[in-house]
Image (tube, rainbow, N blue to C red):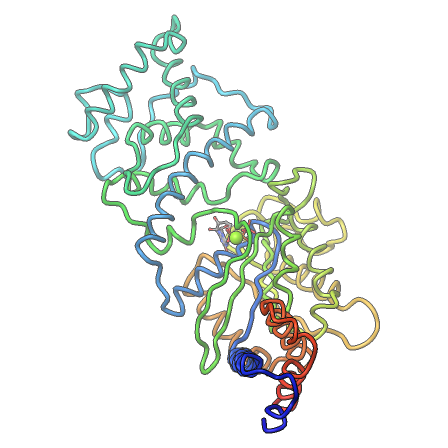
Length: 456
Ligand SMILES: Nc1nc2c(ncn2[C@@H]2O[C@H](COP(=O)(O)OP(=O)(O)OP(=O)(O)O)[C@@H](O)[C@H]2O)c(=O)[nH]1
Ligand SMILES: [Mg+2]
């Protein structure tokens, strides 16, 4: 410091800036040493955000009332837009809704609040309570105004046409607004229609939302004015991630920053912004995607797409020494569909028995491991887990195994080169943020840089 004081041309301002720079770099170093960055990667809809939500539940970082309100609105959106997607898929699937096929005589199952009678015939006498009376009036007004709903056969045609129109023009809920009861009957009737069920069962050809059976199994619960989403409701909601979101939690003495990115094709170019200083990658693949097309590209297969991303991540210069953990996710859905949808149809190289879930697991484990190990030199170790991300108990066990086995890696100090590049970036931004051009000319910067190189 004495030498600094005697350097000609160094003013008190220079010294202050020098001290500030050193302080900032000390803080950066301390943060870097206690922080570990885990990056969630994978194709869209594979379950990355679901894993991130589970980590919040597991590490006691519950959702705030505002966040729960956000998820409540997503539930309504998932019901209405989800059903709309099924309706829109009918043309592609060459299915035609028949208004004469018994439509409108539908009871919602397990309706504890006596709304079923109302939903069946829309008759005032069968109304399930005073809450439904205005809904009935509203419905009758719509029928009076819209002669297009009527035909010689009577009620059946307009019941279907009105329900379709309601779903098509469903609004976004605003904060605090209960689910509009007008939608209860329409959603219930349409979801029970055999043709729409058939369309959903062929959803792999049209990328239909996989959470619809869950959402519709709890329909009347969601419509209660006091409804607040449960843990399972939150885990089942679907909203594609746009951009990058970070969650921080503690693991022993370390702070883990879990970074979630959007996996759809349009989001992937943003990934590189979070590639620096990654300690571990959790790569999520949807097992149930083996026979499914992408939402953003119906000509592409989800599993093939996941394999392509996986291969490029494993061989990226950014992740030469990063530990990689692979989650083969959505095992619950996969276990069901493997019974009827042959793996060999989508992966002709598969030569195991058909309808055998365990043989399919082995096939995918081997394929992903092979893709990771291409080329010469030191081979990458891949740690694979079969998961159902919506199952909190299971994910707790898997994450405990992951952290126990890989704590060494997750908690290892960052590489020296990473640290030096962080310092250089930090200095660069420091210099840019100081207008005093003398700083760029010399001593304070070099001094800070040397101090930190010596410290590490
Ligand atoms: N049944 C079942 N559903 C799952 C599982 N994992 C995720 N989901 C559901 O799949 C849907 C998509 O999950 P997300 O976590 O949003 O997928 P993502 O990878 O974050 O998707 P993007 O943000 O578009 O990249 C949600 O409705 C989840 O509830 C699983 O293991 N089983
Ligand atoms: Mg997401």
